[in-house]
Length: 221
Image (cartoon, rainbow, N blue to C red; front, side, top):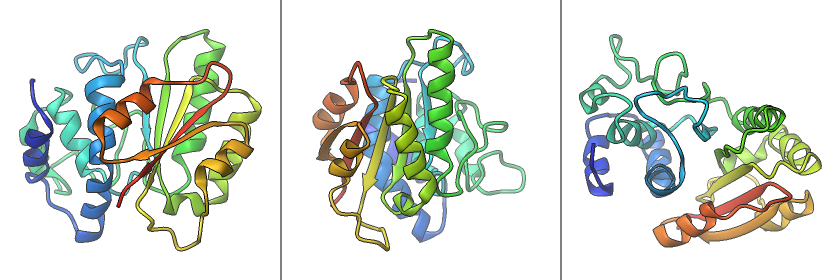
């Protein structure tokens, strides 16, 4: 299915959600679009292909943009978006890998996705696979201790196949300071970008350090 971001926004309108989680979805839209349109290797007709890159939406409590992009890229029919959060639909409030084609991990509880992505990256390295792992977290999620344990482990294990994207829309209840500097202290390659600029997003996601994990701090005004 050929589409663009304008069409994806129209697809998002097919699904309805509460206002709080709609905001979460829109904060991830540009990064997810560039990731699926220009960076990620996948086959929508064979979502479990071993030749795919892996993506984990750790910020799983606002999945409408994610679902719309999966539909736009052919993982399931766009009409299914109308069944979001309905009894007969398969698109729940949190992504479910057993229900939604293209979803790599069931997420939604804060702090779970990055540890899972670290495990996936370790497994792929053990298999000598050259595929990459991407994970998207929110700044509020960075309040969770499990996130920093995973960051420490990934840096220690030099997981160069792992890229973490932090959507920083300044929703955290704690002052997080300079996130790039914090990741760097754990031996990550870190960069901060405008999270709405598609050229900046593409350049940041295309690059990855050959010796250590990468983090992209996507600032959302």
